Length: 202
View 1 (tube, rainbow, N blue to C red):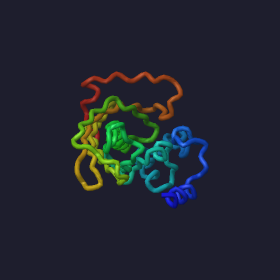
View 2: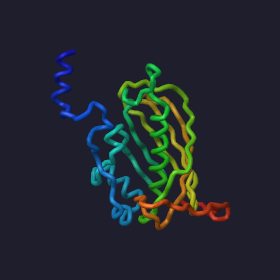
View 3: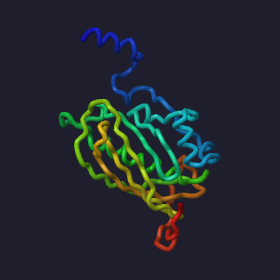
View 4: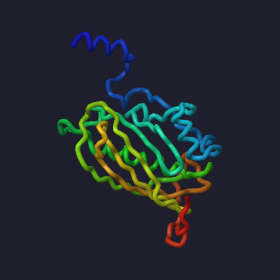
């Protein structure tokens, strides 16, 4: 045990706090110039290739995109004990929901041209079985099932490292053409009605 603690101490920096959320933030939030010059799919593919820096959330909980095509993405996140609730032997459902929601949001992003922001509207998650905090990767696959002018709807499925489906989710997002991805003021969402969103986008 002492040898293990010594090895960890050699790998870990001398953090000012034992709590990750109190440590200096790692990663970067992308500047608006990136979103203005690159479409959503290009941004995600650049993140996967390492051409753009990973965001702070990726360093905090290990969530990361691994595949991206127009209308479909795949994400992974380790089932870490850091994501446990007080109940012994299972991951907190909110952590699984975050992975499922990220897969939907990231997939919606792949359908957006440069200079177009979006905002998640809702998320419904169905938990199918508990997830053990064994440190192995969960895998989430997102798909866009509707893309209109002002609204997109997506689904995602989450699998454990053994390939068992642990959750499914549906969610929607409002599309904001010409709006900055960087939120500096309160946004007024565009009206969404049936006539405006009847035309399906690929």
